[in-house]
Image (cartoon, rainbow, N blue to C red; front, side):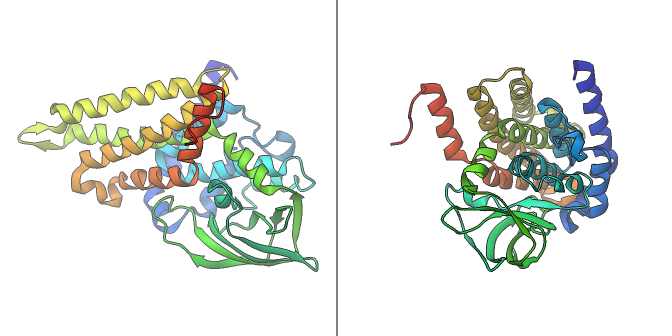
Length: 350
């Protein structure tokens, strides 16, 4: 895609997000991301952003995909997360398998997919009490984001740590309290299914590789969260007055928001540059995640007590930045990976 095409894509996604996501952002937080919204995202090609066209997807390149994630996250990080799970986690796990035909239903929102990735995120197999016996997969998996999905990729607790695509036969056991990303369920699941496929062995390695390969995607979502929260803070500081002056007239407010916007632009330039080295990708991920936390905290402070009301649309960015940094940014692991890239050897392990 050429530069003008990227600009057109950004405008198109931003217009869609403002007209179809931002207008129902509070409902998404309260009631979840509904099928109607998912279908509207699919109709624009967002759910299948990276899925090859021969499987019903849009086949966007990396930069185009990042634009979709960032612009959706400006309005609803949960909506961006649905796209991220599909294209950055599920797609690389299934595209080389015999089950890849399911990608058509995923891209059209007919099938809502999720990936049990929390165990790999914590550096181990996690709670994979799932066994395959007698042609059935049975067991329990804990802490699954988007647990209300209709199909699930998870790991079996066998010696090979097999990766399974479970197409039916699971239900929620527990709905965990969602402090962030409230548009998606966060659940533990009970599985008793005969409709599953073994995608591969060594599931932990494959999921870990997918998580390592999403540096720029994570950065894009974090940039969207930061941009969305800062835009609200800047606008609010123009109209909210105290001692007969708008908040923007006070140095702590004006300088703090200005510095954060400068950081946002510098990190965006890094994330969207061409021909990244692995180190530059990791830098973008680490710095963008840190920016999302700082920017959302500052936006909340600028709004004062009003920032905690859902109608102002600020508190969700703060909660989502924290939740996202836990679920998709392995702070210690990513920082150590960055250190080893910079020192070109094992570093930071003592």
